[in-house]
Length: 153
Ligand SMILES: [Fe+2]
Ligand SMILES: [Fe+2]
Image (cartoon, rainbow, N blue to C red; front, side, top):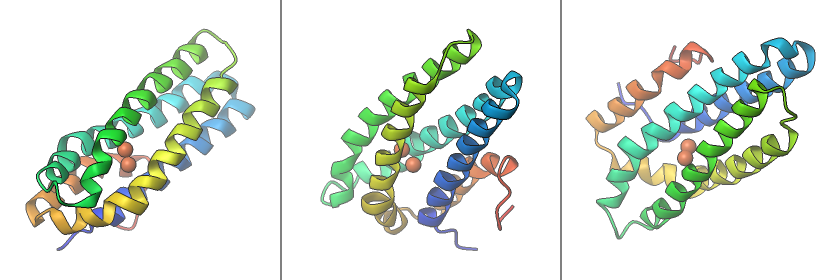
């Protein structure tokens, strides 16, 4: 069965966004569970980023003429901004500090980043990855489905 890497990766963005909304809800209604909820979100996003770093970007970089490859440098830099922001929010939650400012930075950074991946990169990924590579991506992202059951389950 042919898996579309484009769809899988975009669906993951949505699943991860859902976990973020869930966290905001939990923070408001059951603040004592906010840290656990945020960690669920953090783990999912880190898995997604690792999948891109390990399985997607190297393939793009093998095709330097592909315009999407030009995005890799910036996307990697943005991952290096997003990861510390995740840690920052987690630490603030642990210490009972207000997380609003860090949350907003994280949300804004991620929103821009995901939009660019979806508009400029993921379609090319689908063209450039061979079937075994696509299956590896599907496998790497599968764990996310534990949190957000999708049609593939
Ligand atoms: Fe990314
Ligand atoms: Fe992504």
